[in-house]
Image (cartoon, rainbow, N blue to C red; front, side):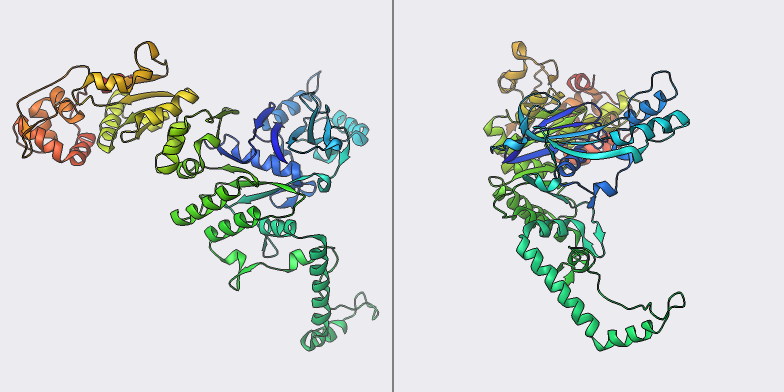
Length: 548
């Protein structure tokens, strides 16, 4: 049993129906801030559990769960001749994998026979008359939440409660911790879901025995004698005493505190908390409940080694559980597999599941590459190394009134020699990308390397920028007297800026050949000085072409 599709409408940033299809095992959500990744996790968890921020949603309903634009449009319409109906929130979760007749039907937004549940926050018809009177009074400045109700129904039109939903969720948010009476609400929820009824009843009975022991303790007896001597409202019959709260069936939840090595859970490190909560959720073994694990940015508070451990735990459980992770970490995305990645951009989900196995395997084995920088920028310039990155950034600044590329959402990314790997990703998501590369004097080899993006195969959003002029000279290097390579960035920069200016920038007095050798041996130092100089610079045409 798994979630195969979710449709969200009017919930927080998602106004228009947003449809997200999910794989059985692992799903990785990526996107810029404010794209709605966290909202997707929150919506799924809310629809399946009725919980929001660790609290029961029925007690926490506010207009801030509704899409802001929809609320404002509704409020504005109340002063017009055609007032809009109150906005509604709808979260539909479609289930695959099991035969569930109670949940199968066409009562859903797509009007197709599906197995699933529909969670709605809508105007309660029983309050319709009172609502109409309230609206008639005018001067409404906020959504009248008091007239709303929360409903769960199946696609077969049956009303249900969260208890009847066959698929359960655990939400792990390592970026923050929420506590209730000293106990972390996430871990309490996970532990509660691990327990069978007989285990819960055992805890309740143990809790009751604690109450008995508490009130029989001599110290407590002495305090209660003092308290009981105080009359309330002048009546000696009404006495006060200290006891243990047993007013609710699950009172043990707010009394017991989870500890690790005798240290209360909330006092251990945030990284350790994240690992423990995630592993507990992954180990859920209640055989009749297929679980979805929702993990919010697992990289928060985790050192590299701990993050590796957590990723390994997630990978091991992917065949047993359905897992949905949101992340800003290229390492997490690469390690877990780019084929599982879903990019959320402009409220539209894009998948990378058609990448070649070779490219997927490359980034999984070398997860340090900044793949998410490419995915999340507006446009990208790919370069080979740090020195190329500095010179391209300076060239961009000179053309754009001193603005760094990133200020215009253009990311200059060093990718080593893995240009084609990144281009495979750019091609799938149609990202505007320029490659700035050296020819090393062999244009034919370069054009063969990028044949998929040149000539008849050219893509309008991918440009390969290189110098099509082969430069040569008499300089040789090394003991073997190998010909100097005049067809890399530094010699090309020297060519257009001339010996005298480059000497001034670098604070040297060298001949042209000496400058070639110095710049070859001191790439980073030279790149930094070029980046910081106040001299007016010229740049090779292929760099200018990339920036244009």
